[in-house]
Image: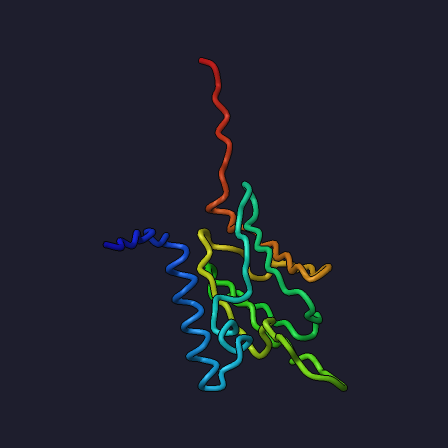
Length: 148
């Protein structure tokens, strides 16, 4: 009698198998990989704070400054809008096109109210850094204790 021993499939193997099946399905419908990624959360960003400011850092490789718009909505929402243009291929054939292109908009709720008129932004080497000064009333205030 021949017995077959079956290896348990790891969660990661199962997820990879499922992703490959989804890729094949989308490919049959003619939806390129780049379009599928465009629907993901974009751009990826980091958000942190110190006593006086909130900071947002967004990865936007290959973009130009004039392709971006930044808005502060109310006192606690930040919106980054833009468009990554499809790369031109003068001659030749694409074999893989995984970088997303097209319009995007990302709005994040900020953990503190900010001063919209004092927000600054810098774009360098594909990284957008936004400095958002906190409203005075939410900044920590040092209380001086007097000896009695």
